[in-house]
Image (cartoon, rainbow, N blue to C red; front, side):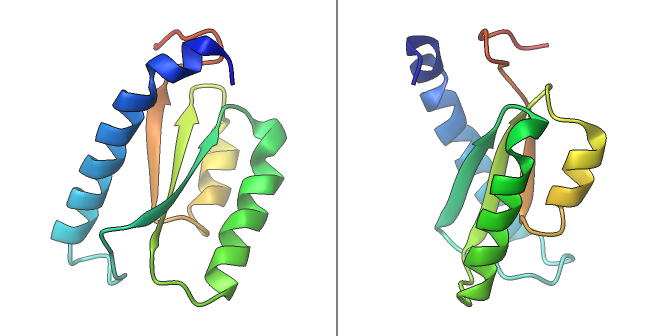
Length: 102
């Protein structure tokens, strides 16, 4: 992992906690939420298939834990729509590969 990515780890952890808190307070979605979640990063569409396989594999195990993808601006709208099928939450506007936030 590049050194610049470590700078954003605390930000990602806070973001994950806030997503889990929001998911647990929202009862309109009908899905269960938990205090634990599977979290992955997606910086571009080139790894979309891997994230989709990961999401489906976790669901196939019967896990009730939330699944969250932290995604950057480099991920297309099409990819975001595909991920919504497999994941509990998508977090947007993460730093890109160079550490810039738009």
